[in-house]
Length: 245
Image (cartoon, rainbow, N blue to C red; front, side):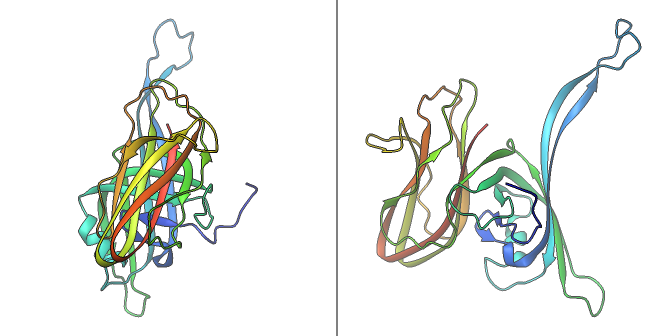
């Protein structure tokens, strides 16, 4: 990816798409620097890396009256922990660069001076590692039947690392609709004999989930999202991101 002007940063907060309600998103990560300087340091300070953390700060135009609007989403999420996925200035297409984490919605600010476009701002603080991965399912493709997504060559998983997967269900319609998404891996891009690595809880409404493997080594290099849809005339819009950390 070359130098870019920020025009299309996609932001998915649990079960809401905040893209059309935000005009500033900042993502930061840091590792504490712990001073270990001693008399053998030869006059130079020495440091060790301590605890790591990440933060998402956003702001934009305030709207309310629907679960997908910023006020409804922020109020319901405040003080709660859930998945957030941020695109790298792309349309959240499959294979597009994604940053995601499980984060605490720690604050929410709204309104301003007379005559202003009503603003909002808020902060999310990480509860899991910040993962640099890829989008595995796009936001604008409705799913009405069971299916599988496009395979991604994320690589094998070393012992001690984990596969992380976030699911953002943006909408659900129909009579008793149900979506059960899962993460599958394969030795190659044919997915001739895929292995299910993670399975999300069945979703019947908008919301978000995030899962990770147990840290065991996995030799499969190819990964994808698959889903089972049931109900009468069901239809789901959802986004998923995958990564290894």
